Image (cartoon, rainbow, N blue to C red; front, side, top):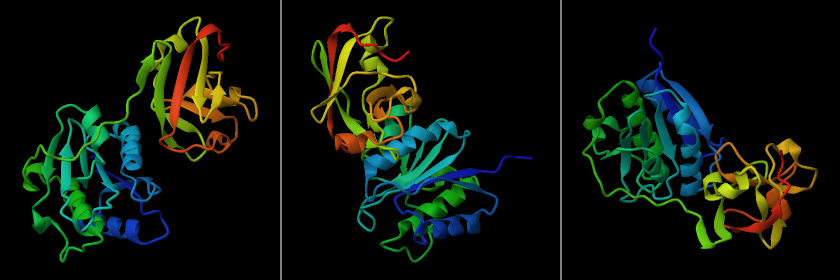
Length: 275
Protein backbone atom coordinates (compact mmCIF):
# COMPACT_ATOMS: atom_id res chain seq x y z
CA UNK A 1 0.00 0.00 0.00
CA UNK A 2 1.47 3.40 -0.94
CA UNK A 3 2.42 5.70 1.92
CA UNK A 4 0.04 8.56 2.64
CA UNK A 5 1.28 12.00 1.57
CA UNK A 6 2.61 13.99 4.55
CA UNK A 7 2.05 17.71 5.14
CA UNK A 8 3.63 19.51 8.08
CA UNK A 9 2.41 22.76 9.61
CA UNK A 10 4.32 25.53 11.37
CA UNK A 11 2.36 28.64 12.36
CA UNK A 12 2.11 31.38 14.97
CA UNK A 13 -1.65 30.72 15.30
CA UNK A 14 -1.43 28.84 18.64
CA UNK A 15 -4.30 26.43 19.27
CA UNK A 16 -6.82 28.64 21.02
CA UNK A 17 -8.51 29.81 17.82
CA UNK A 18 -10.01 28.05 14.82
CA UNK A 19 -7.27 28.91 12.30
CA UNK A 20 -5.25 25.68 12.35
CA UNK A 21 -8.33 23.47 12.29
CA UNK A 22 -9.83 25.45 9.43
CA UNK A 23 -6.70 25.02 7.29
CA UNK A 24 -6.73 21.29 7.97
CA UNK A 25 -10.37 21.16 6.87
CA UNK A 26 -9.46 22.80 3.56
CA UNK A 27 -6.65 20.29 3.01
CA UNK A 28 -8.80 17.28 3.88
CA UNK A 29 -11.55 18.47 1.52
CA UNK A 30 -9.01 18.31 -1.31
CA UNK A 31 -7.22 15.14 -0.18
CA UNK A 32 -8.83 13.15 2.65
CA UNK A 33 -5.99 10.62 2.50
CA UNK A 34 -3.24 13.03 3.53
CA UNK A 35 -1.46 12.84 6.89
CA UNK A 36 -0.97 16.21 8.62
CA UNK A 37 1.76 16.67 11.23
CA UNK A 38 1.70 19.69 13.55
CA UNK A 39 5.31 20.71 14.14
CA UNK A 40 4.42 23.78 16.18
CA UNK A 41 1.78 26.47 16.34
CA UNK A 42 3.57 28.34 19.11
CA UNK A 43 6.00 30.36 17.02
CA UNK A 44 6.25 33.81 18.58
CA UNK A 45 3.68 36.07 16.92
CA UNK A 46 4.94 37.57 13.64
CA UNK A 47 8.41 36.13 14.33
CA UNK A 48 9.77 35.09 10.93
CA UNK A 49 13.18 33.99 12.25
CA UNK A 50 11.62 31.83 14.97
CA UNK A 51 9.58 30.03 12.31
CA UNK A 52 12.60 29.69 10.01
CA UNK A 53 14.63 28.20 12.87
CA UNK A 54 11.89 25.69 13.74
CA UNK A 55 11.61 24.59 10.12
CA UNK A 56 15.39 24.26 9.70
CA UNK A 57 15.61 22.02 12.76
CA UNK A 58 13.01 19.49 11.67
CA UNK A 59 12.33 19.36 7.94
CA UNK A 60 15.00 16.81 6.98
CA UNK A 61 13.78 14.23 9.51
CA UNK A 62 10.62 13.64 7.45
CA UNK A 63 10.32 11.20 4.55
CA UNK A 64 11.13 12.36 1.02
CA UNK A 65 8.27 14.20 -0.72
CA UNK A 66 6.95 15.66 2.52
CA UNK A 67 5.31 19.06 1.98
CA UNK A 68 6.20 21.65 4.63
CA UNK A 69 3.83 24.61 5.06
CA UNK A 70 4.88 27.62 7.13
CA UNK A 71 2.37 30.35 7.91
CA UNK A 72 3.93 33.21 9.85
CA UNK A 73 2.72 36.06 7.72
CA UNK A 74 2.74 39.61 9.11
CA UNK A 75 2.45 40.88 5.51
CA UNK A 76 -0.78 39.02 4.76
CA UNK A 77 -3.02 41.00 2.39
CA UNK A 78 -0.14 43.07 0.98
CA UNK A 79 1.85 42.59 -2.22
CA UNK A 80 4.08 39.92 -0.64
CA UNK A 81 4.02 36.79 -2.77
CA UNK A 82 2.98 33.22 -1.91
CA UNK A 83 5.84 30.85 -2.69
CA UNK A 84 6.34 27.21 -3.57
CA UNK A 85 9.95 26.04 -3.15
CA UNK A 86 11.28 22.63 -4.11
CA UNK A 87 14.53 21.00 -3.05
CA UNK A 88 15.71 17.54 -4.05
CA UNK A 89 13.55 15.81 -1.44
CA UNK A 90 10.97 18.29 -0.13
CA UNK A 91 8.46 20.96 -1.06
CA UNK A 92 7.87 24.12 0.97
CA UNK A 93 4.89 26.48 0.80
CA UNK A 94 5.17 29.81 2.58
CA UNK A 95 4.88 33.59 2.18
CA UNK A 96 7.78 35.43 0.55
CA UNK A 97 9.02 37.11 3.73
CA UNK A 98 12.28 35.27 4.42
CA UNK A 99 10.77 32.42 6.41
CA UNK A 100 12.44 29.91 4.05
CA UNK A 101 15.87 31.57 4.32
CA UNK A 102 17.51 28.77 6.30
CA UNK A 103 16.23 26.25 3.76
CA UNK A 104 17.89 28.27 1.00
CA UNK A 105 21.12 28.10 3.05
CA UNK A 106 20.96 24.39 3.82
CA UNK A 107 19.61 22.94 0.57
CA UNK A 108 21.31 23.00 -2.82
CA UNK A 109 19.52 23.94 -6.03
CA UNK A 110 16.26 25.09 -4.47
CA UNK A 111 13.72 26.01 -7.14
CA UNK A 112 11.36 28.79 -6.06
CA UNK A 113 8.06 29.63 -7.74
CA UNK A 114 5.64 32.49 -7.29
CA UNK A 115 2.21 30.90 -6.81
CA UNK A 116 -0.09 32.68 -9.25
CA UNK A 117 -2.52 30.00 -10.46
CA UNK A 118 -5.54 31.27 -8.59
CA UNK A 119 -7.86 28.52 -9.84
CA UNK A 120 -6.29 26.41 -7.06
CA UNK A 121 -7.32 28.98 -4.41
CA UNK A 122 -10.52 29.24 -2.43
CA UNK A 123 -12.60 32.18 -3.58
CA UNK A 124 -13.04 34.85 -2.53
CA UNK A 125 -9.53 35.16 -1.09
CA UNK A 126 -9.51 36.81 2.32
CA UNK A 127 -7.08 39.67 2.89
CA UNK A 128 -6.50 38.42 6.44
CA UNK A 129 -6.53 34.59 6.25
CA UNK A 130 -4.62 33.48 3.19
CA UNK A 131 -3.40 30.43 5.09
CA UNK A 132 -6.93 29.13 4.51
CA UNK A 133 -7.60 30.50 1.02
CA UNK A 134 -4.21 30.20 -0.74
CA UNK A 135 -1.63 28.14 1.15
CA UNK A 136 -3.83 25.29 2.44
CA UNK A 137 -5.44 24.57 -0.95
CA UNK A 138 -2.06 24.69 -2.68
CA UNK A 139 -0.57 22.08 -0.34
CA UNK A 140 -3.73 20.02 -0.69
CA UNK A 141 -3.35 19.94 -4.48
CA UNK A 142 0.40 19.32 -4.19
CA UNK A 143 -0.39 16.27 -2.07
CA UNK A 144 -2.59 15.10 -4.97
CA UNK A 145 0.59 15.15 -7.12
CA UNK A 146 -0.22 18.25 -9.14
CA UNK A 147 3.12 19.23 -10.73
CA UNK A 148 4.86 22.25 -9.25
CA UNK A 149 5.06 24.05 -12.60
CA UNK A 150 1.25 24.26 -12.64
CA UNK A 151 1.29 26.75 -9.76
CA UNK A 152 3.43 29.52 -11.23
CA UNK A 153 6.71 30.60 -12.79
CA UNK A 154 10.14 30.31 -11.20
CA UNK A 155 11.63 33.44 -9.63
CA UNK A 156 15.05 34.41 -8.30
CA UNK A 157 14.27 37.65 -6.46
CA UNK A 158 12.62 36.02 -3.45
CA UNK A 159 13.22 37.44 0.02
CA UNK A 160 16.00 35.87 2.07
CA UNK A 161 18.23 36.76 4.97
CA UNK A 162 21.54 35.31 6.13
CA UNK A 163 21.59 33.60 9.49
CA UNK A 164 23.82 35.42 11.99
CA UNK A 165 27.37 34.05 12.08
CA UNK A 166 29.89 34.21 14.95
CA UNK A 167 32.68 36.79 14.61
CA UNK A 168 36.33 36.28 15.51
CA UNK A 169 37.20 39.43 17.47
CA UNK A 170 40.70 38.41 18.56
CA UNK A 171 42.82 35.27 18.59
CA UNK A 172 41.26 34.17 21.87
CA UNK A 173 37.85 35.85 21.60
CA UNK A 174 34.83 34.97 19.49
CA UNK A 175 31.42 36.60 19.72
CA UNK A 176 28.03 35.22 18.84
CA UNK A 177 24.41 35.85 19.74
CA UNK A 178 21.44 34.06 21.25
CA UNK A 179 19.27 32.54 18.51
CA UNK A 180 16.46 31.22 20.67
CA UNK A 181 15.34 30.47 24.19
CA UNK A 182 13.45 27.18 24.30
CA UNK A 183 10.53 26.21 26.52
CA UNK A 184 12.89 24.97 29.26
CA UNK A 185 14.85 28.21 29.36
CA UNK A 186 17.88 26.76 27.57
CA UNK A 187 19.74 29.49 25.70
CA UNK A 188 20.59 28.41 22.15
CA UNK A 189 23.49 30.38 20.71
CA UNK A 190 24.71 30.56 17.12
CA UNK A 191 28.05 29.00 18.14
CA UNK A 192 28.85 25.51 16.88
CA UNK A 193 31.64 23.13 17.92
CA UNK A 194 33.44 23.88 14.65
CA UNK A 195 33.61 27.55 15.68
CA UNK A 196 35.43 26.56 18.89
CA UNK A 197 37.36 23.37 18.11
CA UNK A 198 39.75 24.00 21.01
CA UNK A 199 36.94 23.29 23.49
CA UNK A 200 36.49 19.80 22.06
CA UNK A 201 40.14 18.84 21.89
CA UNK A 202 41.60 16.12 24.14
CA UNK A 203 43.01 18.76 26.52
CA UNK A 204 40.72 21.77 26.18
CA UNK A 205 41.86 25.16 27.48
CA UNK A 206 40.12 27.14 30.17
CA UNK A 207 37.27 29.21 28.76
CA UNK A 208 34.71 31.75 29.81
CA UNK A 209 31.39 32.11 28.04
CA UNK A 210 30.28 35.63 28.89
CA UNK A 211 26.64 36.55 28.65
CA UNK A 212 24.99 39.51 30.35
CA UNK A 213 28.20 40.10 32.34
CA UNK A 214 28.15 36.61 33.82
CA UNK A 215 30.65 33.83 33.10
CA UNK A 216 30.04 30.16 32.36
CA UNK A 217 33.15 28.01 32.67
CA UNK A 218 31.91 24.44 32.40
CA UNK A 219 31.04 22.29 29.39
CA UNK A 220 28.92 19.19 30.05
CA UNK A 221 27.79 16.32 27.86
CA UNK A 222 24.24 16.07 29.23
CA UNK A 223 21.78 18.29 31.08
CA UNK A 224 21.74 15.97 34.10
CA UNK A 225 25.48 16.38 34.63
CA UNK A 226 24.99 19.93 35.88
CA UNK A 227 24.47 20.74 39.53
CA UNK A 228 21.23 22.47 40.56
CA UNK A 229 21.43 26.22 39.76
CA UNK A 230 24.84 25.79 38.09
CA UNK A 231 25.12 27.38 34.66
CA UNK A 232 26.96 25.31 32.08
CA UNK A 233 27.34 24.87 28.33
CA UNK A 234 26.27 21.88 26.27
CA UNK A 235 26.06 21.00 22.59
CA UNK A 236 22.34 20.63 22.01
CA UNK A 237 20.47 18.50 19.49
CA UNK A 238 20.35 21.50 17.14
CA UNK A 239 24.14 21.35 16.81
CA UNK A 240 24.54 24.72 18.54
CA UNK A 241 26.14 25.41 21.90
CA UNK A 242 23.52 26.07 24.57
CA UNK A 243 23.70 27.64 28.01
CA UNK A 244 21.68 25.62 30.51
CA UNK A 245 21.05 24.76 34.10
CA UNK A 246 19.82 21.42 35.42
CA UNK A 247 16.02 21.49 35.79
CA UNK A 248 15.87 25.26 35.68
CA UNK A 249 15.78 28.22 33.31
CA UNK A 250 19.17 29.59 32.34
CA UNK A 251 17.42 32.42 30.51
CA UNK A 252 15.65 33.49 33.68
CA UNK A 253 18.85 33.33 35.74
CA UNK A 254 20.76 35.38 33.18
CA UNK A 255 17.85 37.67 32.21
CA UNK A 256 18.48 37.23 28.49
CA UNK A 257 16.46 36.57 25.38
CA UNK A 258 17.09 36.23 21.68
CA UNK A 259 19.65 38.64 20.25
CA UNK A 260 21.75 38.91 23.40
CA UNK A 261 25.50 38.94 22.78
CA UNK A 262 27.57 35.92 23.75
CA UNK A 263 31.35 36.09 24.05
CA UNK A 264 33.77 33.19 24.43
CA UNK A 265 37.31 33.79 25.74
CA UNK A 266 39.86 31.00 25.45
CA UNK A 267 43.14 30.45 27.25
CA UNK A 268 44.79 29.35 30.47
CA UNK A 269 44.79 25.97 32.11
CA UNK A 270 42.44 23.02 31.58
CA UNK A 271 38.82 24.00 32.08
CA UNK A 272 37.66 20.84 33.78
CA UNK A 273 35.00 20.27 31.14
CA UNK A 274 32.45 17.57 31.82
CA UNK A 275 33.47 14.08 30.80
